[in-house]
Structures are given as C-alpha cells and as structure tokens.
Length: 252
Ligand code: PGA
View 1 (cartoon, rainbow, N blue to C red):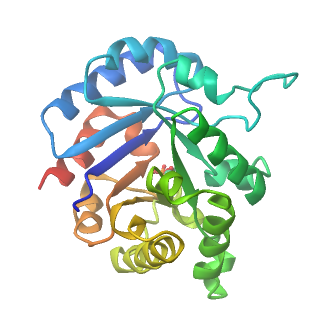
View 2 (view 1 turned 90 degrees about the vertical axis):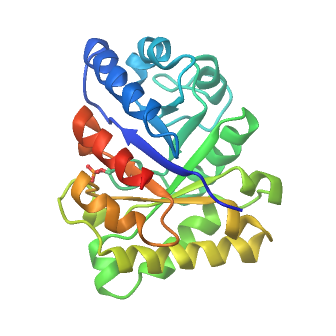
C-alpha cells in the first residue's frame, strides 16, 4: 500500500489571526496544485477559527499544536480534544520536543494525550526524537523506542493504524542543522520495524514524517528516502513560498 505524502506546518507561537489567514491562503493555493501531497497547518489556538474558514472545502487539514489529556474540568488555560474537534481540527501534534523539553511533558502524559485524541477522531502526530547528548552517546534508537512505545501504550492495532509519527531530532529543530538524509532514513526504518512488531500491517501503512530544519533545498533529498513520508516543518512553514517549495518537492 502506498502512503500518501504529508507535509504539516507547525506555526508555533507566531502570528495574529490576520497573519494566519494570509498565510493559510498561500498554503491552500500550493496544496491545490500538488495533489500528491496531503497538507496540514497548525496555527496558534487563537487563529484556529479564522484559519478554519480559509481551509474549509480545500485539501488543507487544520491541525492543533497540543491538547490536554482530560476531557473537561478545572484545568485553567487548557484545551480538550472535543474542543479541537469542534474547532474543525482533524489532527493534533503531540509530544513535540518543545512540549517535552521546555514544558516538561513526560512520555506517559503524551501517551494519554494520544489516547484522548483518538477518542475524538483526531489523528495524533506523535513526535519522537533524541537530544544531542543522547545522539553522541549512541542513544538515539533507545530514546525513540522508549518514546514510541510509551506513546502508543494501550493502543490496539486499529488505533495504531490511525497514527502519524514524526521523527524530530531535537538538535535539528530550529537550528538550521538538518539530519543527514541517510541518518533520518535509519531512524525511520527502525520506527517502522517497531510499529510492525507491535501490530502487523502498521509498519507499511503508518506515515513517518521527518522534522528539524526542513527547507525547500533539503526536502527533495529527504523525500528520496524510502521511509520518509513527509515533514513537520517549523520555521520554513511561516513563509508561504518556502512552505510551497517543500510541498512541491513531494510532488516529484
Ligand atoms: P524547524 O522546526 O523546522 O524550525 O526546525 C520543526 C518543528 O519544530 O517541528
């Protein structure tokens, strides 16, 4: 089974609703001319409503950057999966390295968020990735294995089949230091094997994205790797032309 390529822009904490609407319009135009690639954008929560109107009845998916694991309650400042579904989101980024390492989210919490997302028909984009010291100590595969296994703990095969995984080496995020395409491929192939061991069939169908300093000029080399199915893009997703260039690289 072929896996449809997927490119998701993570806008992080950038931009007003006006900025978001303008950028979303540029993304819609790029997505319409590149049908081989599925496209998603993750604006800040405050711009979800405005961006929803721009992407309505277009091929662009509305994605959230995070969610709380509980369905409701006294959790000031938090957002539930039902609220995201209500706001028009179809996917949610979980376990992004900034959530793990800046906000201290543990693996188990991220696993609970994955379950909560699936319970509301949101596709979780589960992020995994090693820090520089972990890579230098040859710990990369152990780290991503632990993060993946804890992130999907408790899922049955049907739940696993709905996941998207994003491999994002922490040292490559926002630094301009992209992973070598072959190194990304090694980790992607490892994750794919793990998925297949857990639930037969998922190794071939679950999409595994790469993230970390993806730009128009390095996207093609990464796309050329057999287990790289697309990207989670930060900085370059804030410029319409750059993001369009990355989407275009997936069309070839
Ligand atoms: P970057 O961010 O593309 O700016 O490195 C990637 C990410 O944080 O998902």
